[in-house]
Length: 146
Image (cartoon, helix red, strand yellow):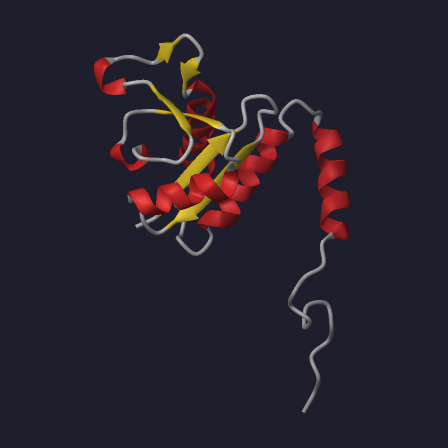
């Protein structure tokens, strides 16, 4: 099964999305502890996997049609997931488990740069691509003849 978790930093609007093999409480708590500081305030829906976190935690109950309670809401990350679903339905149509994390990286990159012009996005992408060093030493080298 292909599943993923995500988190959004409200002040910076930065998103982290991670492919996971399990959706249990232990996996979720590990993800939250990796991505947040002890002082972070976590806003979630009422899913059981969030219970018992070692963080300040506020909840909206979607089951009771409660979506906002003052500043407590999950609208930012829900908006990101809506764009992920639109990308899946409109472009990808299918994701393999093998490439799911790469697809999530692409979509978070697009989210982080969505206010920029296409030309600016292409420039950033080229700078990041040329600065990236591959861990596959055979790439770009001709094959040796035997």
